[in-house]
Image (cartoon, rainbow, N blue to C red; front, side):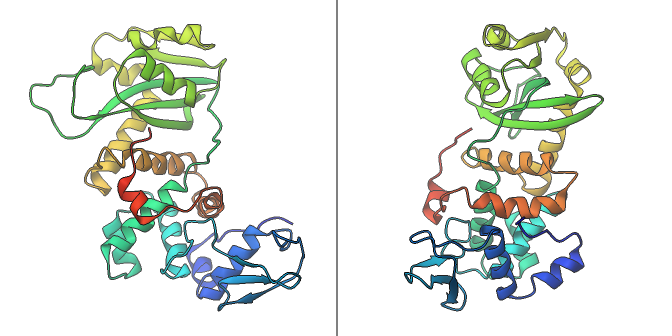
Length: 309
């Protein structure tokens, strides 16, 4: 059986997920679309206990949490608030900051919505995400506050974060994207990102920076273009630079900046939302479905997280 469909309008969302029981039923139907099977004895019958938070097998009495393995695992926050948070994050075009989400949900503590957002961001990337392919534009940009005495172009030393983007060319339009952070603009860093984000055999368009030169020896059809002045890059690689423009507007407009430590997870959110920009309602269900592929993230793990870009 297919998983349950997703709400197509705000009114439908409000009707379908107005109670905790409705949210639990949706979770059960999504996690076991073909019917419940006990993970211990494979029995097909179970009944709810602990106010519906657990399913207990009628055969061996083994109990399974309906939220186990998801971002909602052992949460003290109402499921309705989690559903609303996932809905708002995936359907509100500019995205949400923790403070904005706190106001929308009416929660008392800022820290609660901050943790919720961080967990949702970690659920936005599949562990074995496929690589983009075809014709791909690749370039990098600096993300951070202004630095005195800096002109355009690449810098060997900077306090800013370096973000690399790979963008599929779809005719005159833009396909899927991948974003990541790198420690520097050296060949190993830039080529390493490309190998992680772009499938071998793809045509990779870059500027003439020497850091990309070894791509032709790594199974890619590398097409470098000498751009001249840095300001010409946007004309030569319009898709990747539109992505950078949207990214910076989002980071500074919605979040007022992002720390280097947590930047990779914000990039994951941007990629998730951008790649599903034409199906924002489906992204709500996709986000809840993705959560089952991740081990639960603890509060301390969020604060101790290392940069993984």
